[in-house]
Amino acid sequence: MNDNTIPSIIPEGDGSADALRDISEVAAVEIITSACVHLMSAAAVKVGLAEDEESGQYQDLAEARKLIISLAGLVTAASPEIGGEHARSLRDGLRSLQLAFAEALPYPDAPGEGPGEKYTGRVS
Image 1 (cartoon, rainbow, N blue to C red):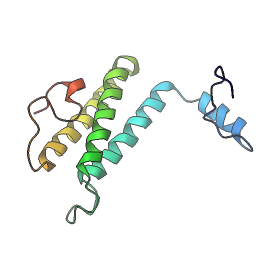
Image 2 (cartoon, one colour; image 1 turned 135 degrees about the vertical axis):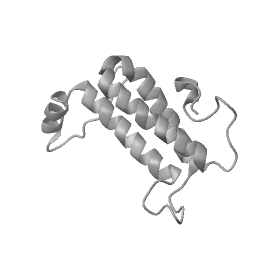
Image 3 (cartoon, rainbow, N blue to C red; image 1 turned 90 degrees about the horizontal axis):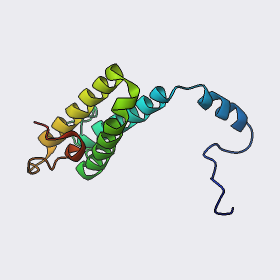
């Protein structure tokens, strides 16, 4: 591969043309929303909101922080492009995760230093 070649994210072989055609038919807002939902779901599990809440088996706050920061960046950047209704729902989900994260911390973050607050402003 030379420096001018962009690697394909679509797997080669049987079905790649179908996958490319399928993704071309999906609206950008659906792809963005789907990515946000995946980040939200993973963050919720890592915060400890999974079914096995009692044992804390899945809780990993360091990983949750990374996911919430990534989600905040995506939601903030995408909001003007995806429309008010979609953006509002994503911001509400993000805020809920930020609050759940703050509750799960043994020691609180400094004001404005919580995950994603760099993008969203202070959450309280």
